[in-house]
Figure 1 (tube, rainbow, N blue to C red):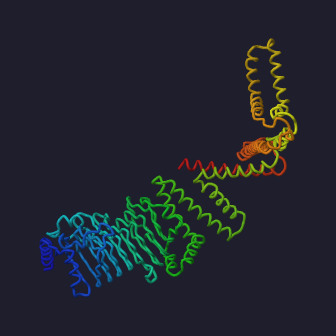
Figure 2 (figure 1 turned 120 degrees about the vertical axis):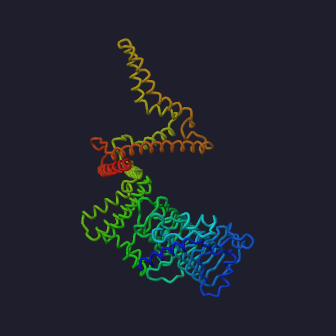
Figure 3 (figure 1 turned 45 degrees about the horizontal axis):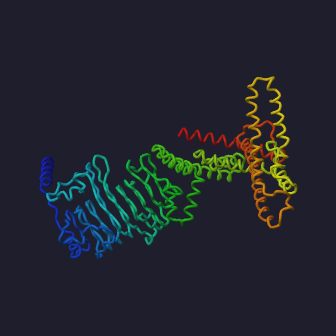
Length: 590
């Protein structure tokens, strides 16, 4: 008997599913007329097709832009749609829903420029392994089958330019052959939760399996925004106010998922995976981890106390710190696998900054040389080369060190600039002699260089007297050397002679010419002084570079205080060059 009943039940099921199913058809205008005329407290509709009628549904034609203003239709009763498909030529636009709206397993729906004051639920739930699809309705033509979930494996719900002030639940659980897919698109909407009551674990916006969540503004007030999975595109969204954006751990991130251009809340929970595309510009400076205890604190404390609590947990709780860092390390690995080394290095620097803060905390808790040294060495490496990720920064800081020490050496005499301390005084003597004696500037120059020129002349005379006792090779090569040696002095003398404007002593210059001649002489004097200063500084810079690079020069060619500064600079240079070498090798290996 039991077997007979079972067989009868199976035959009856086959008979029922084998019948042609016809969905109720109505135009968009008829659909809203039905809502308005319905005497039920909740308007319910199931198994229907909403067809766009060109002659009657102009009001419900898709918007070309937000400038296409239309009268707002106010709906003051709850709406419940189940398995209601919409013609994609039309849209629900400029509507104001004052009560709850629930849309289940309904396709090709476009909602634009509308306001939702009650809760909104859009839910597609189909798993071919659990509940097989219904028989294809006889009147479900190409306008609908292109989007219907059960017939060619795609779903569509476009939610665009709307304003929502209550709870929203979007879920597209459409599973075929163990793959989840769908195309719920949420674009350019405003979700305003500033006036919602702050409740424990309040989550006014929950999204799951969206294909696109883009250019939306979410205004928050101590609420949790939850995405059960990342949409395919998660771009240019802004989370305003103090809130908590949560992407639950171990959720699947598709290969095509792209996350960029978003402005997240300070508190954002993401479990990073290797196959997602994340933008570090979106995520840096955010608190990127959460666990149950933290979430409880979030809903109990004000903004400053929550931040203090989060920072305290990182510094004091080793398990929390380790979990937080391991999550960031997964993000770093993600970037390196995609060869985005800039972002990978930025995440690595963020991790090392956290470690430096932990070391500082450890030092304050246990003050000794070991904890102090570990903290300071981490801090220095971060400042000097961003923990080995930026060798160029090490070069820039090294140049600053070299210049600072060069300034010290500039102020003190050294053996590498033997004329340095007298150079400027000699320049004063030269110009004062020029103003007080009846000789040209070139003559004074020749007088000062006479000793050097006499040495050159002696060299020339010796060559001439030896031309018969030595091979011609020596004369042929020595005379050009002589001419080259005196060329600079002769050239300088000719220039001074050509531009000599005094023609006598300063006291013999007529008063009417003194002002302009004085200006020229002072200008030339300043140029000469600047030249001397530059030469002296270049000598000091050369000494500083040699000391910093630890090339070595035997006895330190400095006396007094700079002698000890040179020793310190040598140690600093050795240390910095070692770190630079390690940083450079690390980047080359990466």
